[in-house]
Image (cartoon, rainbow, N blue to C red):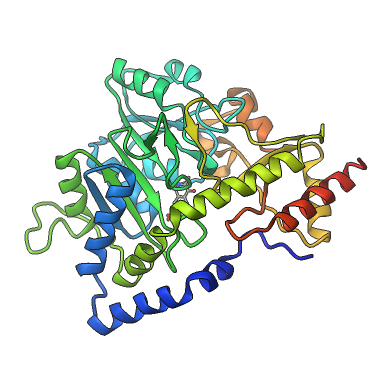
Length: 366
Ligand SMILES: *Cc1c(COP(=O)(O)O)cnc(C)c1O
């Protein structure tokens, strides 16, 4: 059996007529940049995120950068973020003029550990960027309290967590703003790049909208950038958004099947969920003994896996200047040699899940 890590074609096949129609319509109306399809999608996505404003842009990395500029980062301002994420989260802090301050993750959810945030706060700290990694919300209750007590803003990186919730509130609606990615492999993925910022803050929304489009068309009250979602992507995303609740349920079902099938393997820790959270299972990440050998064994049996990510952010060459050592982030450091992402998508069958579990058992000679 061959099981790819992601299978975007399977999803396309399941909705091909709708997608083809949507693309043709945009072409027929030449609504390539901005226009009706982009506006309609922004309204729909804002509603699904439980916020007033959705500002679409070129990708999820731009969304972080634009939002942070909008939150008013000044040169030298410190922003606290998690040691375990995709580099977009931290590189945009630097691009926006801030200084990255990494914080370790907790032992169960792979998200920033609120108990370790306060020790990182200095008079120059201005904000916190929690990441809802793998589809699970960070501990937004504790993070919100810390932010309030220390007058910090919160920007939620929701790139992996469409429709995930904390205390029944959609991610992105809890902090001052949230950002999403519509990269093809994300839970809501375009057929190219895309992203957005969501917020309830009118002023921030207006500023971000302007900045992402040259400081406002023919208004240019500020200098901005060109970061826009195009009409074809917006029309595709609109179609896919109407299936997202169903797809997220299907991902949860696959996760439950994995949890059951992997339950009695002492060398494997299955994903744990923190209190008050609904997971959207962008990734199903186990912690496994002899991870690299297991990964090679699975590949030899036709099962593609991934490592998200091979290193914790502070240990990449890009952050050598911060001179961190493993002891600064013990949990994130230990996880980097144990984490393994198994294939998960709505179309994955129970038979495929059982095959993956059987091969893992075979590897550990159970
Ligand atoms: C994918 C991702 C991003 C960036 O999204 P792009 O659309 O690829 O720029 C940011 N943060 C996290 C955690 C991501 O997974």
